[in-house]
Amino acid sequence: MSNNNKKLFLETYGCQMNVADSEVVASIMEHDGFTITKIREEADVILVNTCSVRENAETRVRGRVQGFSELKKKNPKLLIGVIGCMAERLGEKLFEQEKNVNIVVGPDAYMDLPLLVKKAENGEKAINIELSLTETYKDICPSRIDETSISGFVSIMRGCNNFCTYCIVPYTRGRERSRNPESILKEVLDLAEKGYKEVTLLGQNVNSFVYKNSVSEVSFPELLEMVAISVPNLRIRFATSHPKDMSDDTLNIIAKYNNICNFIHLPVQSGSDSVLKDMRRKYTQDWYKDRIEAIRRIIPGCGISSDIFCGFHNESEEDFNDTIELMKWAKFDLAYMFKYSERPGTFAYKNLDDNVPENVKQRRLEEMIVLQNQISLENNQSDIGKIFEVLIEGISKRSEQDVYGRTSQNKVIVFPKKDYQVGDFANVIVKKCTKATLIGEAV
Ligand code: SAH
Ligand code: SF4
Ligand code: F3S
Image (cartoon, rainbow, N blue to C red; front, side):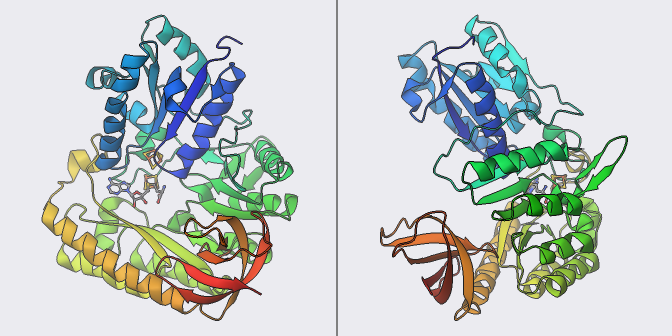
């Protein structure tokens, strides 16, 4: 133990992978003698786990880091570290641009954190942004930071090889690598032992998972089945799936096991074939529709969500209209919608002009949001009168008499608490809804 009794405050931005990584970081630091604090003012070290996916994600983090000046004034020994995707993308530049930053660590270098903290304490430059072809943190048992949660993440693969032309992730996360299934199962079983009721398997392209060694090969559907069998009383989810790898084998495994949730997040990005081509998404509108039809055929009633963004290079009104038509056709339960944000270093940044004016992007985004809100509401309305099995996740923020949880289809539902406890399963009939929430009663 080299950092006995020091306190670490961890703040996390970005995707679920970052949430999972922060638990790895917490574990590494705890092994070095740190304790995790929820009070910023008492921290010796603050680590901010960051996202670079859109410019506004980075702007937020910069504001946050600049805001730490007050704390530094009060405690001149306080060390601030930027870790994760922004650290990887900006490297040394972060020291120049953000005066408060003492430590910079990329997503594959977290094992080095305790040493880097020591260096920073000695006033030395503390940076490691080396990407790895093999690091999966397979031997780290993540510290579950939110002890009240009944739902845990397990990352099964890291990195991305797809190089969609607009996307920074392959540069910040490095090459795709899948984790040893044995260590995945060990972590899943550990969650079950700790009383967790749900596990989400994570990866940037989770369904491209493939683990090879000299004797065997494990594919994503095979891994999914192994997990489903090993923890029959846990709900299993996974994200994010790439449409090009969404196989019938995977869908059949979901249909076969009751404990694998009937929900798939399948980002489409655009409905226009020419935009999809410029994005290098490796599928067409027809391919995507075929995958949606396969989901609905093999897993009737499956919840489906998506990511979509407008205003990419050369997106015409006609292209945008293809996206609108696809949204009407697919009737996603939920969609995360964005405006294109050009990212330095990507293929698009170098070769595909960011030529849709900001006001056009904004108008298109608003049009998508209005449409999706309408579709989400209609989908929820069609659930009225149906009964769903719900895993209770917490007490409603609006009323202590109510609990909330999610259906297998990933819809949030609120209903009277009665004698139910967080972590219980309940059968709930849907009575009412809004566009975002179902409201029901246990039966
Ligand atoms: N690996 C996942 C998603 C990664 S990023 C996948 O392949 O789908 C999450 C979402 O951010 C993406 O699905 C995309 O919709 C959006 N996104 C990524 N880069 C973007 C950019 N440069 N501008 C706007 N949105 C972007
Ligand atoms: Fe980015 Fe594409 Fe990889 Fe997803 S699949 S992380 S959008 S490059
Ligand atoms: Fe953001 Fe990095 Fe995740 S860029 S979306 S935190 S992989």
